[in-house]
Structure formats: structure tokens, C-alpha cells
Image: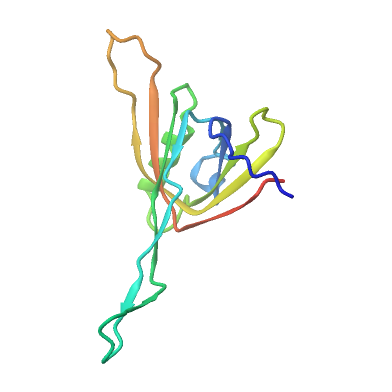
Length: 158
């Protein structure tokens, strides 16, 4: 019988592989690192409601179009500017140059094995945000990137 204990969310890894990275001056994988936060792995289906003539007590629900959220990644800012270069390269090009695949791996608490793997398809950077600069607070500089994606899949860890 499989273990039904819930997974813990503090131990995960994010990898982004850009299609044609070399042609736009990037390396692939673009990043293969830990982020402090990863949010936005969601899909929502809008049901289509059909009413049957003469039947006033029920309605039929059919599957409708699926929409996806935006992936938000946050991490402590370092001298690695790959995410910034990716955004700039995509923003300065026409078409689908620089789209990517993202891999978010939820690891076991001890970090030795993979519990789940989300594969995010058709990634496109849509927002990048520099850290708020405040000399009084002395906090770690956090950069944030939002990525739109066309779909995602989830599978058990290997």
C-alpha cells in the first residue's frame, strides 16, 4: 500500500530549459537552483452548462476550456542575472524565441528522493521584479519572476 502521508513543501528544486538558448545568448538549463518560493501551479476548468428543453430541475455540466495560472518564483538575488537576460532576450524578439520548459521537483524531507515532478510547458517570462531597496531594514534582496505557461503535467518522482 502506498504511503499516504502528505508531502512537505519546503524542499523543492526548479530547473528552466530554454529552447534555442544559444541563439539568444543564454545557456540551458537557464537555472537549476533552489528558490525560496514557487507559486502558481494551478489549472481551472470553466464548465459549460447545457439546459435541456422541458427539464427545469436540472442542468448538464460539460467540460469546458482550461486556464492556467502564472508561475511566480522568488529567490535571494545574486550576481547570476540569467533570469534577467532571459526576460530581456524574449522581450526584444518577435515570435516564440526563448520559450522554455520548467521542471519543479518536490523532494523528500531529507532531500534524497523526488516525490513529485511538475513539468510546465510553453514558459514565457512576463514579469521580473528587482528587490525593494531599503537601507533601514537590512533584509536579503529578493528578486521575483512571473512566468506564463500553456499547460503543465504532474508525475510521481523517480
